[in-house]
Image (cartoon, rainbow, N blue to C red; front, side, top):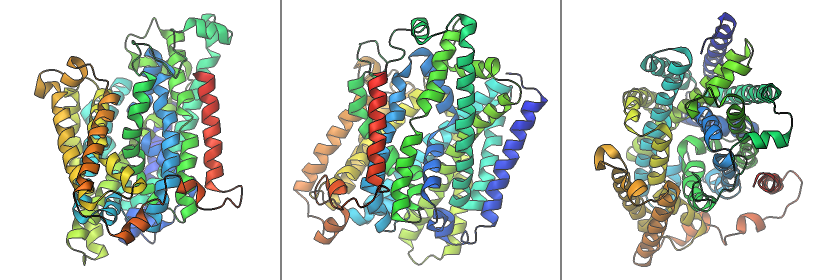
Length: 537
């Protein structure tokens, strides 16, 4: 994709601006020299920042390119991942955030220590570190390098290195406060850039003879505008999706340190609760500004696009004027940097707080900060080294789905039943994490062609990756309650403090006294979501 000097100027101004904002925030963050200040922004984040940061940490470059590509090839069905996130973010805000906030934890593994035992904390910290390095950072770096190679002709490995260095600078200087502030800016860039591109694509429809909604639907593939597909040829049948998404989503949205860390940095309980629900509203947008553009690209340029992932580059090249091409390129870079920065900060937090601090409780803040920053350096080096190996997977989405499907079940099991059930024992939490992780490694190896020679679970057994996650969750659940039946119960005080009195206590325990109550906000989100599903079912 050719950009002129104005577009490059916009892109360069954006890069310099984001790094400058991050460094300035870090330098002026008076609390950054404490571990809480660096890792949790001194617990000063207000809910709009929390929500914007949650959104930005989730959206990566491959997310934007991939969603447009999926819209081009399959339609709205892949938007279920975006809209289902709203439900899971409500769970994070209403159910889990109050427990996280009142226990004043620094990491999610620390919560498992309080609910189960110290060993469970160490195991989850290990799983989360693996996830951060190999999924959030490694895959994002590779995807970003690939995209920038195709967009600008820059060697992918040079692009990976440059992106890593740029993101590293403000992450290591400013800590979570710098990450969150830059993510708020990047969220605006993402939404504005993608919205302008969508509007411009719609204005181009008359050029191909499309002047009405009926003509637009007629020019698309069958079911391209349907969210709830059930036919055998659908890449994402609704029943498989809704069985699997609670497993993947509970881990990603409610237990992943990269995500949860924003909630842990909230100033008040209200901020910790409203931030995720606000992010749920923002997550309604990608369907319209990332997937719909892919459908429009099919109508406009299906004869010129050979590979689905070319949909977004083609749109940027053909429908955006000079200057806006640079802005959209900045949006792609924003998506990439947000995900990587969040992964780096969470990795540094977990190593410092869940490993070093647990093993040596008397370690002072200065040493913890040094260890956290050294960890960020080490993680970025490992992730850069690992990222080219992503090419060994059949595709980037396959890599993401395979990793999430096998890593999520044990974490989702111990988190869900740790809060909703008073039966789970300390050893059940620990053993389920270990058992589920080993089960996941086995399943991953069986579905990784360089190891097994073929994808046994997916291709030979014909099990959809969402169903694979669900079946593994079911196995982990049976294991969890079986171990609970034969091991000592948790302390009653722990159960009283860290589990719900009944499954609906988060809705009924306290009275609603004002319209600003988070539950009202969540209800409004659910109403909007229901209306959207009725329209696009």
